[in-house]
Structures are given as C-alpha cells and as structure tokens.
Image 1 (cartoon, rainbow, N blue to C red):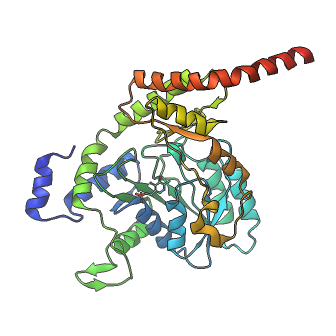
Image 2 (image 1 turned 180 degrees about the vertical axis):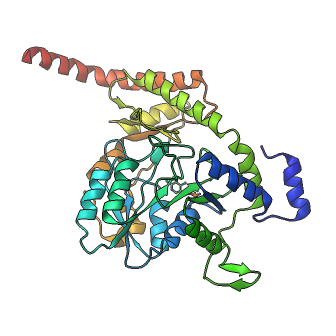
Length: 372
Ligand SMILES: *Cc1c(COP(=O)(O)O)cnc(C)c1O
C-alpha cells in the first residue's frame, strides 16, 4: 500500500490534487499498457466522457454501445449529447463485430461516429475485426477498459487499439483506488493535450480558460495508492487467471453450467468469472445459503432501463442479451481466493445442479439409444 509517509507528505504539503504522485502513476500506468499517454482523472465514467469529448462527438451523433454493460458506458455517450445505439451481445458477451458491421452498414447517413467496445469481465473484445470495421467505415473506437487492466489481444494491450481508451480505478476493479479514480489513455499527442486541458476547467494558466471543461482531476492520495498497488497488479492478475482456470476445471463436468470461454488468443484478466445456469436464481439462493456471495453483471440490459426509455427500444429487441441477463451469475473472484474456497463453491454448485439434471441427461441418453 502507499506508505503512510507518502500520505503524510501529501497532508503536510497540502498538495491534495494532481501533483507528483499522480504524475508518477500516469507514467507507470502508461508503461504497463505500452501506451504513450495516460491522464489520471476522477473516475472511469469521467474518463469515458472526456474520451468522447476530445473526439468531438456530440449532439446528432450516434455511438455503438453494447446493451450488456454497466450503465456508465452509455451515460458517457449521453453526457456529450450523443445517442447510444445499442448492440446485442453474443452468447459469450462481447464478440459482436458482426452485429456492429450490420449497424454500420444500415447507417448510410454516417450518423454513427464511434464504436464503444467494452472489454467486459476483463476479456478483450474482438478488436482486430472492430478496428478493421472502424477503418472501413471511418469511425472512431473508444475502448471501455474499465474492467480490463493489463488485458491484451493477440499482441496489443487494451487501451491501445485505436484512438482512446478509458480505465476505472473504482475500489472493486482489478486495480482499485481508495476512492474514485480513472484514466484516459491514448497514443495521440493532440488528443492527450485536449483531454488534459478539459480535465482542469480548460485552464491554460491560473484563472485563464480557453475551453469549457470539467473538474475531472485525480486526487494525490489516489495517485499514491494506485502507483503503489500497480506494482502488484501483474501478480494479482495471474492469481485471478489461476482461480478462473481452477473454476473452469472443476465445473467442466457439472451438468447445465456454462463456463466462460477460454480464449487462447487473448489475455483475459478475469475482473469477473461469470457462468450461466438455467435456474440461475435458484442456484444463487442455494449458494447464498451456503455462505457464497455471488453477483449479477448485469441483471437488466440497458435498453430495458427506465433511464433509457426515451430511446424507444422494446423488450425483445436484444434477445441474446435478454436471455443472458436471466442466466448469468458472477462467482467470487479476487486474487486472494484459495483453492479450498473455489472447491467449496464448485461443490455447492454441483450439489444443486446434479439432481436437477440427472433426469434430463437420462432422457437424452434414452432418446439417443432409441435413435441409434
Ligand atoms: C466501472 C465501470 C465503469 C465506470 O467506472 P467508474 O470509475 O465507476 O465511474 C464504466 N464501464 C464499465 C464497464 C465499468 O465496469
């Protein structure tokens, strides 16, 4: 953790906002993602907002947003005055290039100005195809990497694919501050300078403002904490990946459970380990009774949120995401998970699933025999 000496120093100097600790963190985080520029900001939501703003996306523009994500992804689009254009998910959540292509093709007036892929649960979206589409249709890509610190595609690290990326350091994320924090990353010098200006009220010298900006500055405490924790992030990430591999091995032969895809071509950082089950709510209750806390990420797709009623979508518009929302279950996932804890979770899932699925499996076996 940030040593008390560093925090004492911040207090003694009364240097609570930005400053050298934030700058050190920005340098190190940029280096960890092999990206030229990193700008420490006040949250992941603010990072997404700034990213869209520096690309001049605004009223009249559309931005493609997955319908199965945390609402902040879409909110950032609304905050710049643009319209979220929702994209259904696939069975494994974020391999949606085909759907993106269909929407871009169906947009002859070129209202859609950007794609906002989400590296959901820590798994990189299919960026190779999305980047090719972005080039073909001349649209930007803003990566929502809020759940995907250190994740990478075949060769490229997230935040780095094209144009701008946004990270969150909300305490529950793979790299968490002791409060709210986020970052914008880019390889584009001009976009970086623009984001930096807007982060601090568009101020070029004290009380001289050349643009209407925000107060999206990162606090010094958060910079100090994040710089210290960043040193451990590779190790923590490897532990998450080991935990995920153990879950997948133990759940492989449990009837009626779908485990996450194990891609060989990407480095998934498992912000969440999400399974699917037919009777998800029953399974969830059974796990709770056995002391296992689980989560739902996310229970209501964005087009069904009252906040987005005005967009005019209906239930049934995004059938894959709607079906997934009823089946997904996030199992405990953090670096300190022990083998015993993971085994306990998987054993309790097996208790619940086996009696329910045996008759189904027997019936299938019987019909197979009859057919044969
Ligand atoms: C956490 C998160 C955000 C928002 O980050 P905050 O720091 O909480 O504002 C945006 N998108 C996704 C996918 C997230 O998980």
